[in-house]
Image (cartoon, rainbow, N blue to C red):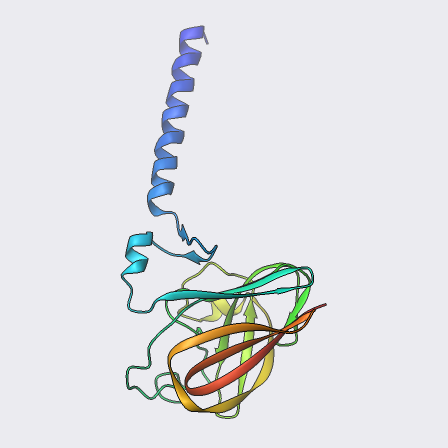
Length: 199
């Protein structure tokens, strides 16, 4: 191949790379300013009915962070009705609820390595199963066999009644010790506490 042929080939390859990069930019998932992943363009995400939020807590070894969508109760009966008992629930709205641990940890007793994970729950009247999944960047539903094949493990936590209902789903993180935090999940008249600890 002569010099002009090489230049032409290089130009064609460069053009193909630029087109692919433009396509990726147009459809690539967005990253929020808080580091949380969401699907679609930022302007579209901002128009959703359920706002997105995050919570974090600093422990020895780094900061634990959770990202989630916040649905409203809007007068509906939530646990046992809108969210059926005994069935997997994404524990939020839109994208899967995601958690980042910067160190080897246990989430609801499930041992994990540092990194991002998604969480979902199987609610019950008296207790919830908290499921840790290895795929963090995914839409929250369906939670089918393909999703469950990536489950890391399941822990069980008690479910408590809230005297004052929470209109919006709220997930908070608070340190219980230098190496342990509690993740509080409250919505409607239900509250659960999920332990997260450094291994």
